[in-house]
Amino acid sequence: MQPYRGIYLFDGVGFDSNVYFIDGELIVDTGSGIYFKEIRDEIENLRFNPNKIKMIVNTHSHFAHSGGDKKFRDLLKIPVCIHAAEKKNLETGNVLAERFRKVSKSVTVDRVLHEGDVIDTTRFSFKVIHTPGHSPGSICLYDERRKILISGDTLFSDGPGRYDLPGGDRELLIDSLERLMNLNIMYLLPGHGMPKTGGIIYLIKQSLRKIK
Ligand SMILES: [Zn+2]
Image 1 (cartoon, rainbow, N blue to C red):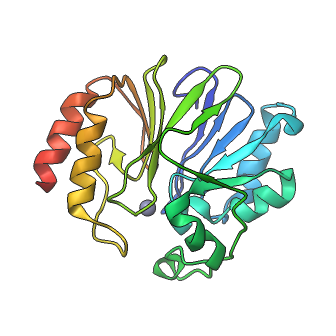
Image 2 (spheres, helix red, strand yellow):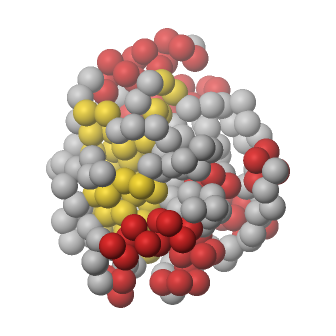
């Protein structure tokens, strides 16, 4: 489905994260890798030029979001990018795979991201917003002009992300959600579950009430 014109969502099955394929140029999260072939086939069916796919961005390092990185990196020869705080997690395979009784594969990080970095595609321009709390290097991607927020596991369509996993921090998650309140968001594209259009400030307020 296309939650926004030019953005394809391959929604996660089971514990797998959502995979967003944007403008034929950018992959945001790769799922666990269990469904790599299916997702690859879906992308091929869209008939974009694979040579134009230029990078993989992880919203954070958890296995459900990053387990497919190595396979996509090997297939497409494109850089894997993640916030600096979780580079080491990806490179050492410390991504909580054991929680799903899976063995993680380490993957080289080609570029580290920081607050304020900008990731451009032909039609979109996403700013990196560092939103720790679910994990230390969680990021959201925000396209201000189109009012789109890709929120990883920081915010879902029905509430806040978890802060009780290793590296999680309730206070930091509260701070991060409060920062998101300052953004003008119309389209929320979360790391799991369905996207949401409108009512995002209300959602964030409710989410803060849940965890404060
Ligand atoms: Zn997570």
